[in-house]
Length: 297
Image 1 (cartoon, rainbow, N blue to C red):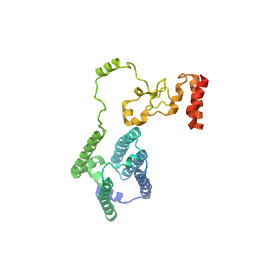
Image 2 (cartoon, rainbow, N blue to C red):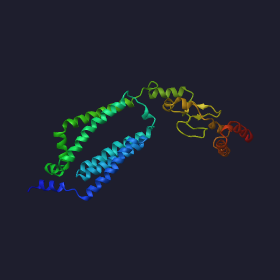
Image 3 (tube, rainbow, N blue to C red):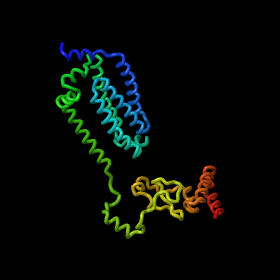
């Protein structure tokens, strides 16, 4: 008897530990997959996808495919998915964005694609259930290792699918570039032109920062000038272009801190008292604030 039949016979027997691990990990993976679909926030869906990918990597390890296990964790979970998660946390995606149908009839198209994937999935499960499963030990031993065996299978047997996947990835990259490209709001200026415009303009020095003379120091909150007016120069043009109607309207409670000297103890004390009064009686903010400020003056 040769080595390959011995290894194939050894892999046919499934122990109790492997069966228990399959059911435990299978339950976790199925729940994570359902979490990806039914989570209301995209960040939670990405985290559930990470759990799903880690469980899939453990399945690779159980089936004697350590190379696929490492690639699944390092490349997909550690690099691609984490990059996707960081982008979601950076730009922010609300649940209301997913309700907008950008493509007409996309729900019907989604159902058709799901059925197209369901047919080969059911066929594969039927083949595994009816037929005799073949382990990975025979192919790995014949090729001299898991990595040469995977390489030979990809290059010789699945070369068309491999090339199609590469073309799909290139198309996805080009689509991402097209979606990320935006039209400039103004004509691109050189460094020399920007320096000349700054010297000739009203603000040769740095522009006022956001949140000045205000209770909030957020980057999207416009600054208030000493007279209580809004400084349009304190906002980044990109932030102002994203939501101009929100940037022009400054909450009225931000104007209460203008009367006191910025940074003084009276300013801090008066701001705290005004904030406490606003929480108790929001309708009387303007009258109470002006009277209190005149009394302090």
